[in-house]
Image 1 (tube, rainbow, N blue to C red):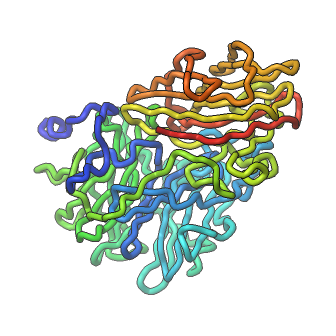
Image 2: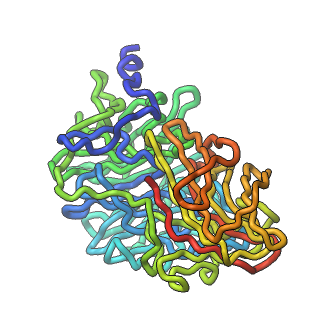
Image 3: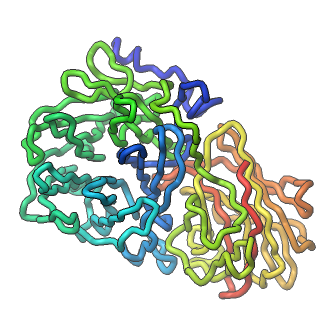
Length: 513
């Protein structure tokens, strides 16, 4: 009973007035109130790097960079071409919602960065680079087989390499494989079962002192998901000793999947997502790690030598430069900023940042299903944040639109909504859409139109439009963001035409205040 009482939440979930670096030597969780799921984290010298899963979004697998584990920036998205995985992730098929790029592991070995990840339908893949910012090598398939997830790797001190993968389709059995020294192949015949059962996944291999640790999460019905570990004095096992490292903390949405890393201050930390998603997705927090009897206990250490959620702490490192995750974009560069991802692999010749410098041009083509935003292949998106006040404003030049074309500002996860313009019989009209239903508004006579979306901690969006950029009028219903397809809400700019490949819209800016 005492464990449960001490584990109770002291902060009401989602109702945070402050977060991240407080500027006074302290930080408050979450450190990123946005959908950065399936985290792994490493330290290379003075820098920290973390990866986040991206499912069907392209380019895939977001790489974050930090100097202090609290303030982060987007370094790049590692997988440029999702068709290396399979055609289902392309605009021609669009059949990987909730699937695509799942959790992975990030490692640094012998002067190279290595990324390994799984997709539930296509198998395991890897890539590497000498520089985290890119370019990364084309993907190398490691195992073309469905039903696997959440891999991890390690090079031992003798140079031997090992790969760990979980066969979730067969009772969550986790196997250790021998891997080639270059990390590009695994020996299926070498498989050794090292873990299984209870939804055990999210494996991470680390070595601290003389011990090798397999850190993973486990789920039990009625209890929740929490962090576990096994350990061995040999990388190849056997991993006989086992311990629960933290409570489920269901009231804190189950922080359970991340990377354990030694900080520059000599202390240890767990950079993790909160696994029970809501409209804001699976957001990220930083928890302290305390070594107790040779086990990395996560969060506040209770008398029972088990960890629980911590909502604030001392900054791991004070850095003069405060990195931030960029959101706004004036489209002044010749390539898209790294906060942007397409919904599925795009048609590269149907958007441009150079045809009209300073503007993003989106060219329209038919969706796979008529008037279906979720099957339209030219939607540019980024993550939303859960803060007290959020406002996104975009400015469009609609003079290049053609009959049948639709474009505007949208939100989506498993459900969707949007405010935009449709052109019919030579005239542009306002249009509000929600889950396949549309509402037509008044004509838009001007060349330029502005759209906005505003929301707060409740995730309730209110759309508005303007024809002068100053005076905004509400249009359409309010829209409640939702969780779905393992994702929180995304915001996007869409452009398609049910009648064919004709028309375009130019976007001057996307301002996220």
